[in-house]
Amino acid sequence: MDTYVMTREEIVSYQLRTLYSRYGYSQYKMSKFEEYDLYVRNKNFLVSDNVITFTDHSGRLLALKPDVTLSIVKSGRDVPGKVSRIYYNENVYRTSPGSRDFREINQVGLECIGELDTYLLSEVLTLAAKSLKRAGRYISFFQSPDYVLELSHLDVVSCLLDSLTVNGEVKGELLRCIGEKNVHDMARICREAGVDTAHVEALAVLVTTDGTPDEVLPVLTRLSNTYENLREPISELSQTLSALPASVKEKIRIDFSLLSDMSYYNGIVFRGYIKGIPDSVLSGGRYDRLMRKMDRTSDAIGFAVYLDRLAGYYTAAPGEFYDAVLLYDDTTSPRKLSEWLAERVANGERAVAVRDVPGNWHSKEVIDMRGGRGNE
Picture 1 (tube, rainbow, N blue to C red):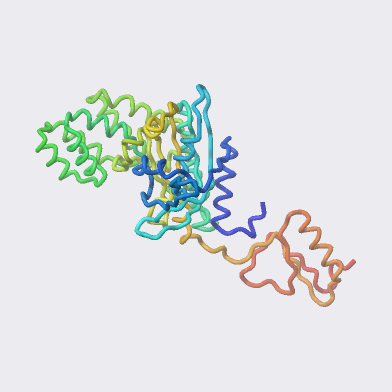
Picture 2 (cartoon, helix red, strand yellow):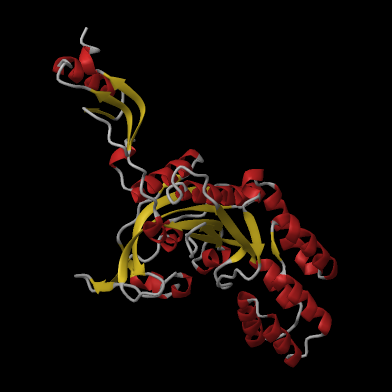
């Protein structure tokens, strides 16, 4: 693949697709249009609930695709013992955060669907981290990119809330406080709902504890000694983190204020950030509940990389890059020069013949054919 003629977005997309393919993921291609009913029934699952619609000649109301995951879930089939590894590179049509204008957005992502185990969960997290690293290379050119994968576990949050024995309205208010890390209002709501002090303190510990796995897991273990229903999700989280390569685990930050719609998501959810970009550029999680809503029995986890959020931060390459630069003057044989260039290009190299090398050019090799050199 000759990346010299590709834009930064095309290079990142290619790098990510190559990564996923090497891990055994197969590409999924979808139609530009889906029946609008698919989206209206699952609008809370969408990043944006604004959808472009039109009526076709048969009278069906169709939507210009705002999401890929829903299409993948709808088109798939549950096969016992089979795990589907799918990646996609699709354009979706939606409004961006803070904008009411529709945009065509190039999105790359993957889904892992089937009977999920510890390894598969760790594989998806590993690929999410590797995706941030590859995308980040083109934000900080030729430097080691700094990135972080922020992670939560929704079952830990929901199990602790279930222990409070409060109604759904109060749970909703408490979830809002957890997402805002608003311990003051959380304590007030609990007090008004008659929640005892010990439960309030446990909830405050969960909300205010964030950091590396080594910092957070001991705190969670102490909570599970008091709340038995926390043991299973905390054990799953701990085992998944233990299965990660050390280079990935060191990029993980656990923060339980990271929440997603619990009517669709469960278990591990995560977001990815690259230094220098204020918004997340990757988001994902486990969505077994969406699968059940769509009459699927398989479990599922996946993520998407938002290439539109990277677009304004790509660092321009510091000058032109060549495998070989050939210097020539009036004494150089044009035939020899053509032969040299033809040989280089035939070998897949990028080569150029110039009289002088501009200051912003970089090359692996400079061949000086001036003064008659190379004419023999």
